[in-house]
Length: 126
Image (tube, rainbow, N blue to C red; front, side, top):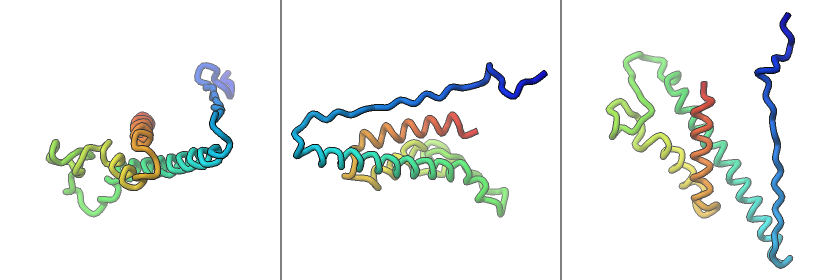
């Protein structure tokens, strides 16, 4: 008899909360909170942009429905003759968000976000 729940394949989702305690004078505290919320918003927008572009890059084969002669590869055209990018696949989204959010959020945050989303997308795209 099969049970509706297979205990071997069940997963547990853990949620962690991070509490920030800001130890600065109260005059500067509001400005710092505004900056943190702005960073959070920019990361949210950048993450959506990265995932959208990665999805389109993966689905690009479906856009070429008129002919079978079109050959493509998601790679740098300098490194692969069938490549359709003018830079590496990882650098396509990095360049996009660095240019879009320049001066609004540090680039190291955007770089880490891009790398994390790239690797997660690659693992879960199937």
